[in-house]
Amino acid sequence: MHHSIMDGMKRKSDQRILQHSKNAKSIEIAEVGRLLAQGGRVFLVIRHAERPPLENGDATFGENLPLTVRGMMEAVAFGMMFKKHCGNIVPRFFHGGNVRCRRTADLLATEWHSNAESVRRRLPALGGESPYLGDVAARLALAETGDYMAAKNAYFREGRQRGFNRLPEATAEFERTLFAATDARFAFFVTHDLNVACYMAGRGVRTRFDETTWPGFLDAVVVLQDTNGATRYGEMRRPANLVQQV
Image (cartoon, rainbow, N blue to C red):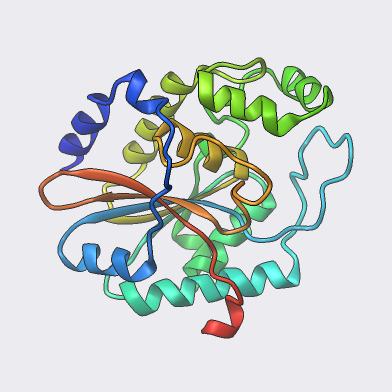
């Protein structure tokens, strides 16, 4: 199955990768559960749960920031929702290197594992070693020039931008890293908003963003593959009033 996934992904051309998606496909948790029950495979590349605001000029981008109380509650609630629909398939959990990604993975995993720390693993590509990220000084300078959202949208549209690596190649490398990390049928990859947005754009889910569509806390790219090897992509938004729903 692993080879059929990768072969299908490699056939995507740069033109396909950079196409705009007029209507991003929304994926519901129930749909994930149905596909897994049919023997399919699902990966979620998900932004960490809520954290406190970043400090201006923090070159570590809040490496040691914790989750807020609300963020912790929502991560647990999100895991509970997945357990309800996908409880018979035990997922694997991967995360970037900083505290908020690791804690989000821990809290998601607690619904399946009494010792969550023993089942999640750090994956450098989900953090500072993301293949999308080029020179950090160039990215910081880009953010200070004015409309950073416009600059990122230019990257998603054109596939290149200072401070970033070329989008098609970076997307292919990012995806290879995810699928090489596990042979599980169900996995969570906890990362940052920029990685989520870049992967969305690289796979044509959504290639233009504004403040309302930028990946929020616990928003995700969903990769779904059926038993015939057909792979598709969508997005999953954190439900409103998440804690009250479980």
